[in-house]
Image 1 (cartoon, rainbow, N blue to C red):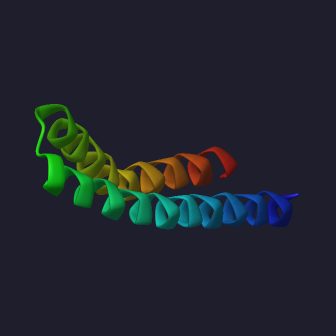
Image 2: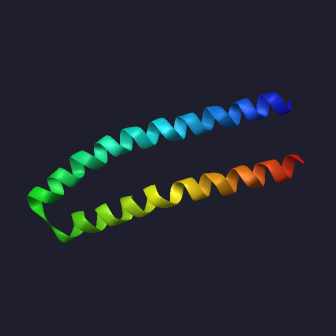
Length: 72
């Protein structure tokens, strides 16, 4: 059961990683469009995406520590 749960958690982590990779390419395209248009809404979206991309590893680490403390 423990092996199955840890395997599931690794699958979820890889899924998050691939989603972030896809979102990074989307983010590059969006930042190029922001550079071309330079509207306020686009720059706000840029800042929110940057903060989410910065805080996601901390969120994943907190979720993993909570998961291990629940199992022990």
